[in-house]
Structure formats: structure tokens, C-alpha cells
Image (cartoon, rainbow over all chains, first blue to last red):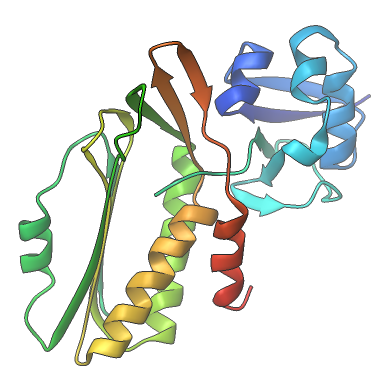
Length: 85
Length: 146
């Protein structure tokens, strides 16, 4: 069985998925595998995750590359490149 | 360790009060960012990832304190809906000498721009659109050795 992780979405990723966060059960060992799992849901998720080059990710509030490993109960966030200041 | 004050929230701030709180030990440098007025722009809505924003900003404040001999630093970043001309961000640094104060201030605002998880939605007369990150901001980060 897969692992349950807490997934958060921000900015246009949140608008396309239609939710700011959810618990996801997936057999995904990396951020990339989780993104591909979400993309396969179709609809707004397919749009949000169509091009991973347009996205950034964080695991437990740390910026990470898409190859980063994930574990059960991690907080994984997907968002566009940041534009603060 | 020097004093660091960090606030993230919708409230406006008073730059004069922020400067005064940095003390008078020799050199105080600051940066204040405002919403730029642009044709058609009604407002900006700033969204953030609160848990990560707090961690990222605290970490960069610690890094600035390790790199420069700072006596105090203050960071204010607003979120929510802001109209053109509104203040968005304040970074202030205090040191005995100007160079440390200037450099640490510039380091902190560059890092807020490129690492802190904030996003801006432009509200325009003809609809809304997300502000895209700029490559020039990545270049600013490389300047600080990352």
C-alpha cells in the first residue's frame, strides 16, 4: 500500500487543482513520482502538473529538487517560482 | 547574537518607527518596497506559505548575522491585497559601520525576492494574472554565493 503525505498547493497550482491542500495516498518515493501521480488524475491536476519545469517543490518547508525522497507524513508543497519583495 | 525582529502579515508599517527601532550605534541601512503603479493595475494580492516563510526568513536572518557584524535587523513583509503605492516590504540593518549595514540589507532583500515563498496575483481591469519570477532575481542570488 502507498504512503500518506500531506500535499499543499499555492498560487496558480492551487487554482488549477481547486484545493489548497489534501492528504494523498500514493506509492511515490520521490517528489517527481508524486507529481506524476497527481497529474494522472486528469482535469485541473493534469493542467497543474503538465510541465514540471514551471513548478517548484518543498518538503517539510525546505526547497527541494524533484528527485528528493519523500516519506510518510511529510508535508509536500507545489508552487510556481516565488515572487516576493 | 544581534536582535532580529521579523513580522509577516497584512498590517501596514511605519518606516520611521522601524528605523528608530534599529538604534543609533553607527550605521543604519534600509530598503522599503512599494507596489509599483502600472497601467491597468488595480491591486496586487500577495499569498504566502506561512510555515515556510517563517523558516526561510529566520534562516536568512541568521545567515546575515553570521556574515556581517550586525547589531540589529528588522524585516516586515505584508500579505493580502495591496494597491499601487502601498508599502510591501521593509528590511533594515544596523551595524557599527556602513558597509556591513548596506551589504546585509541588500543580501536580505535579494533573498526575500528569490527564496521566500510569496506569490503575487495582479488584479487588472481586464482580469487577474500571476506575476512571473524574473531571471534577474536568480542572478541577484548568485551574487551572494549560491
